[in-house]
Image (tube, rainbow, N blue to C red; front, side, top):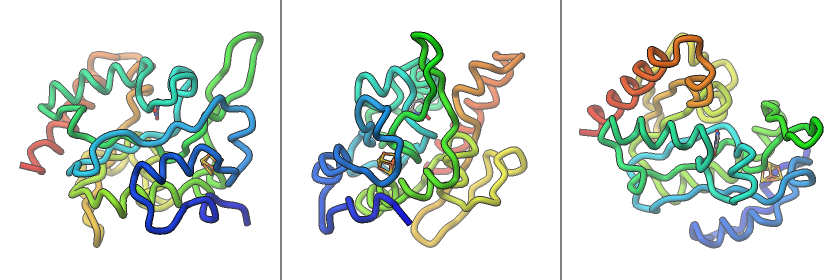
Length: 201
Ligand code: URA
Ligand code: SF4
């Protein structure tokens, strides 16, 4: 089956990965997107944050987490004493999946097929960075890293030890923006990030 695997160059550094991803055709999502949105941040990062997929703003700008969810994430990271500049930010899926409704582009959650097809990029990023901890934002990211059966609702904030790194899953910042009690959802999100900060020491 199709996947990004054949587009991932061997022995590449992060810059070479990023440039190879521009022409990925590992699934159909490239066709309706403006551009690929690859991960961003230092190769020396101890913490990698994985989101779902770029949103509308990210798709136009070509950078991860620069829209409304990204602003909330930045604020929460800062409150948890985690500095965005020291974190590598990326997504489980690197192209924006959406439908058009008039002039608006509506986010569509990527399916398992797209997550699996795109996973060679995330695997390659993690193999180069070798972080101590991977923080997954939302169910799509958590399933991409921890397997399809993982349930964020049952295990948010818990440290899961894998061979290569530890993993913590929490909710997606977009879900905080949509929550009926936004303040409470935000406090719980920051608490999970503080847990990560304390765990890293
Ligand atoms: N949501 C994500 O999951 N990733 C982004 O880069 C932006 C919004
Ligand atoms: Fe390639 Fe991932 Fe984009 Fe699909 S979503 S075309 S696998 S980079």
